[in-house]
Image 1: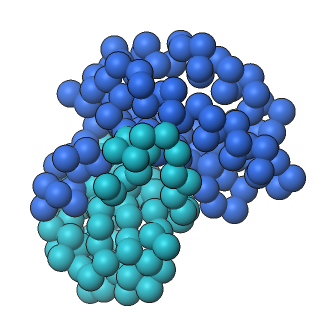
Image 2: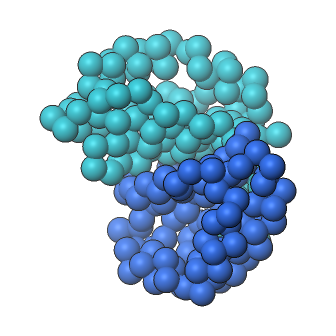
Image 3: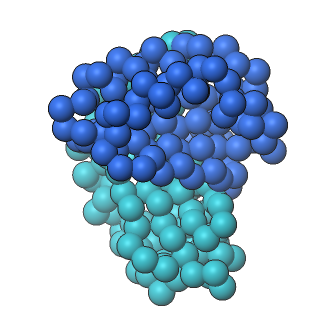
Length: 104
Length: 104
């Protein structure tokens, strides 16, 4: 069963550019991790949002302890404006499969 | 520019089945709306999460005032366990385009 993750990182107003650089730097490396099906970054006023899909819980667990993640959280730490909110969930398929699932 | 929406709906513990039925019922109709590129439902303990992508801000605005949405929010209201959290954001492309964007 795939695992979907939504991670919301609030950043300090003056940190948007630094945070964007730190987070985008990690993305390509994460895409190469086993079981990574989706790892997409988004930005809005004061927040960065990752939407992720992992092949299964084991792949997500392995991801969470990679050197890439350790470096990313170390680098982003001083720029955070509060605790990240991380939600793990399972897909509820409905409607048109082309629009109702993150990964087709 | 596409608009990505993450909507987190907290539901009462006893309402999971009713909420799942109400939310999945809306999905197929939303998929047929103009500019809907992704509208995917997910579930975790006590929360339902929509991850959405709309072609542009006008499509999202039109979506927010459809009869489908009015009915969905009316029906889900009694089952909510707090206010929905709705985040609108823009994609930050990075890495492998096949894994770094919600809609390829």
